[in-house]
Length: 534
Image (cartoon, rainbow, N blue to C red; front, side, top):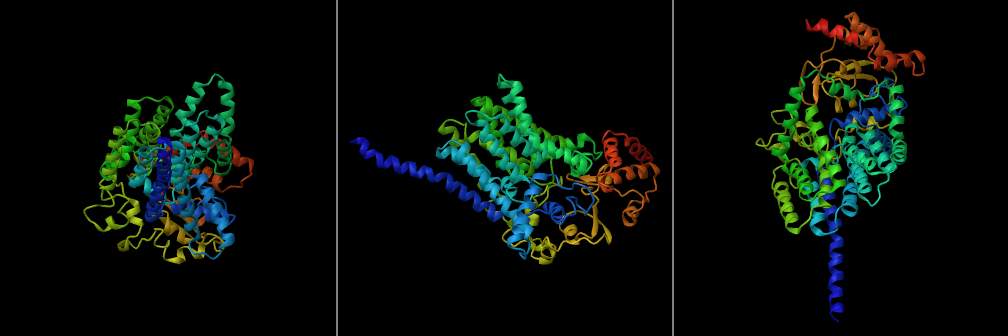
């Protein structure tokens, strides 16, 4: 009889618990919609998408083979959604803007859904420890949209984690997901590499596992072959521009440490969420989750090594997701869970920069600067909806507002008839996108220019490594003839320009790609740098 009396109450309790994941997911979805934005850096990819869909190649300038985007997979998905949307809504203003929002929000919601339903334990405290650190993290909410590749990185990571932690890990599937992560952002592979090594190490059939993993990595290998053939290089031009700067590494490491100090000051819940994963594994070791956390640790060391970024929180969103996946499926003891959750709420909800109430409010408060002394900035506050700066990149503000920036260049209006001018931008993004396809655009930070990307920076702050234009280089771009005055740099440019602009299928070009990547022309660059250093 007691069983009969208790049964309805137990059923009601189960129903209430079943609602919790969806309530937490709804909170997260509401917060990303409220804070959704597009960064100016995302618009760099927009120009490549327009060129690609118009038949001018995926370069930043029509028919010039320079990869100015870091994320081939993300760029391809934006192009696909933009193309499909154009078939049904050809006259929609700012269609590319909304295609990017659609992808970002869809992948972000799917990520948290998988975390709550496939990775976290089903009890209320575990589910809360899964969702609330993400929902209250300024960095994670900011980069659940932004137009950058983070939402797709998050989605691929959580799919990888769910597969890795399942009863029997499928090596080919794990390698395939890692391959897609590499295609989306190469350095994010650091977070899955240790787990792959664990799968290999734990198996008695290592040759078979290696074969399966090789098959999984074929998409990435195919892209690298294409990239080498088409662009002439294995890495995007942005990697050369930001990692080949001539800045002393000691200075970059100090800047990388400052990146974490910025997070401690502006977004403590993010760092606490990552630390909590390490503490939970120390208290109760778990081999699989330990290898996931080793991936997080490697990525954090990498952040320090490269100097962090100027986007506050951008490089910490993925480590937070992996850490949250570890904690929500592993941390034991209601007391420990309760304390952890209390700290998360304390750090997350009572910060002036909390996603709960930040929106564009802090942009008007002088006591809470957009940028810190190390040039690490809260970019969403700058571009979200700042009347003083005339910026309206938020979802709520209906895109670019100045519709001429979007609608005349909506796919069928992006018409290349020949380069009419050369524009040297202080920064790529909206201004360069607005110029349209008939303006040849480079920037002082070398993101779209392979020659400048191979020169040392003359001045820098993190994320922005400014180059001086060599004498005669602007005239070279304006006239199409080599006017560079230094003979060594002039010859070096000839070889480089042939790779990015010469006939695609010409055998001589293939030979030059080999010679250039083998370093045979490096002495020319070294002689030039020697001459200008005196």
